[in-house]
Image 1: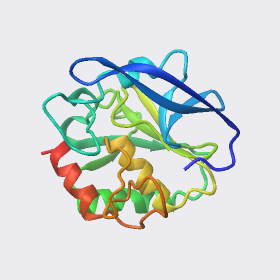
Image 2: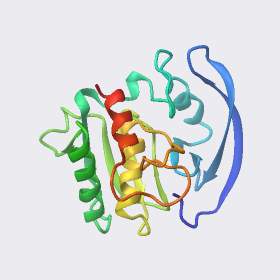
Image 3: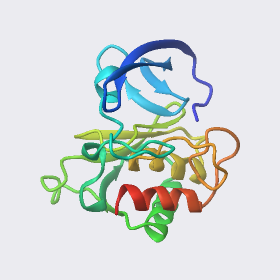
Length: 198
């Protein structure tokens, strides 16, 4: 949910799925970042978009929304994270994490200097323009960007992307493409997470 950020539209053909068939995807560029459907962070247009999109889809899994390939899932259902000290209103993050931990089998572990070697891949919640996240585990540090306008519901939504969920038009998910965001995880979210992380 990008909030008040100037953007331009671009498109390109990227290899997606088992066959690697080039598929046209349109994305916007905001502050030098490629965003798909407004809040899915692809990276920078020149260096990240094509490699990141390739391999997102598992050939053996067919569902809507598509799941990221196994290499983009969080090992052992553990999502290490840290919160940038400059980010205001941390309660929206703790409440959002509580939703994911209470209603799914995912575990969020605060990344510290003591466990940093154990968790080389992790999420950092930081201040930014708009609300956005990558889909699934990117490798190394990845960011969930939250402006001051991003609510707990927006944070639940963006964590959903970091977990591996895409937008859905179903009204029982928090990862809805259009309309207001839910304050709790819906049955659709929980079902997709169960399939992604059996």
